[in-house]
Structures are given as structure tokens and as C-alpha cells.
Length: 385
Image (cartoon, rainbow, N blue to C red; front, side, top):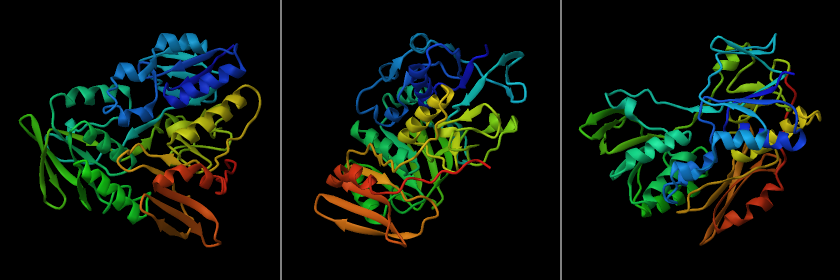
């Protein structure tokens, strides 16, 4: 009997495998991963420094322990070179592996700016546990970091680094942090809180060059402003990994295209997590991932189950200024209504019919996140055609 094969060992892959094993303890399960197979929570990477967490402390289990827990064969440090959907086979080098059903939990890669200069290849990104290990080691004895990108991950890292007395320069094209998620008044509140920690904001700008200056790096910004720092960290977003799927003839767009059952355009091939575009939505956050894993586990166990996405707010790890955000779905027109108090800000986004479609909460208002989420319509997911 050919196994169910999962490619990947991140949160999506392991969440799916754990949930599936609760429903089916016997079907052979093979997990193939290019990483070392350790289980860890990726969202913890952006606030691990101030918590004093080493990479070893962040890992909850090594590959052998995960294999035992999941009653699975796990093959770490292994890359799938091709998928043949017609014959239900994978290629690993010259080896052929058959599958009964295949799940692509490939994750995403960090976007990379097209930077000039001999220091461009030394720019860090933190997308997994090994990246965090390298960045943490490189930070030893350093005093300053430039962060490229003032979005969610960039702001979380800025807050975390500032909390361990690292001088942070935060650089973004937008005029205020989280410019794609927040109304300006809330972005400015976050900015003031970060600046109180010592973070220096360089808004409306981007980096063009990174040059080595001995043990440091010199940055040249688009505005012409010079900057000198010990390390450079890029946090400008993620790009779903689609190459393997595209080469196999699967439909891809921003991510690997699936319907609401996580089924791709090929029979018995599924996708979930950061690499998946589920009925038009690519949602690289924990709660959508967990709901997808639960639904797909039921489907693989013989109970066809569509994934549903209610409003799932994202709580940012920016203790300098607590925030909870549920951005309105793309394409919905409307306006923000903002209520500001001494210790809180409520920002609600209403569409043209007066229906609440999104919100952003700051300060003490974060406590209202769950209540507001209950009043927002779930996302509409349609079948793959």
C-alpha cells in the first residue's frame, strides 16, 4: 500500500500529520523535508531574542521523536526533484517513490530586494529555525541592525531587538509602519511606541546598496541617505514556493491553487499552508493554517471536509504597542471609522452597505478582538474550476 506523502515539515505539515493520526492510526505516512525535521513554532522566531530562547529551546521535538509520535517515516535533508501526477510518483534524485495521496506543505521563501554592493549577499532573513540560529550567532557582540521592511515581521523583530538593547533602523517605503494593514493614526501610534524604545524609522525610503565596511555594512538608501550598521535583516514579505508544483503541471497563481477542499488541479494532490492559494486566498497566518490542516486531515481520513475561514484576527507581537488586526478582504470598498481614547483605538472598516468587514485594535482595545471578529462575515470560498 502506497503511503500518504507530505512534503514539508513546518507547522502546516506537522499540524496536518498530528490531526490525521488522531483519525487514522494505521495508514502509512511518509514525510519528506529539506530541513532537519525538528518541530517548532515559526511565529516564535520574531520574539525569541528578548525571551532568551536558543534554537534548541524553540524546538519541541527532534526528527526521531516526531517520527515516533506520528507513526511516520520522516526523511530529513531530502529534496523532491519532480512529481509525476499521472503515475502517483515522486522522484528523489534517481529514486522513485509512490504515493496514494500527496500533500504539498512547501512553505514560502523570503522576498529578496535587488540590492547592489558587495555586502548584498550578507543580508539575513529569518524564515526558519536554522535562519534564526545563524542570525542569533551573528548578533553576538553586535550593537546595530538595519531592518528592511516595516510590515508585520519587520515590526516584531524591531520590537524584539530593541528590547535586548540593539540599535534598530527600520526602513520601509510606506510613511508609517504596517502601512498596508493599519489606518495611519494607528501606524503612527505604533511608530511612537517603537521610537520610545530607540527604534529609528526611515519611512518613504528603501535600500539600494549594501557594501562591506570592514566588520560593518554601509547602506545607501534611495533617498541618498547613508547608514552604517553591524547587520542587515530583510523582512519584506514571503513568496509561496510553487516551482515544484508548476513543474508538475499543477495550476499556480500567487500560490499553488486549490479549492476549498485543499485539492489542487491534479487528482489526489493537495496543498496547504504558506504555499497554498485556497479558492483565491493566500493567508500566511497560523489560524488559517490550523483550520486547513484540520479540514484536510478529515478529508484524508475519508470524510470529505471543506475548509472554512471565519474572521481570524492577527495579534501582533509588538508589546511596545499591542495590536490586533483583521484587514478587510481585498477588493472590498469602504471606509474606516476610528474611535480614539486615552489607552485604546478602535478602527472598524465598513463596506458600502454598512457591513463590518475588518478592524484594527490598539492598546487596551485588543481585548475586544474576539467579539468584533464574531460580527464579520466569513470569507467566501468557491470550488476550483
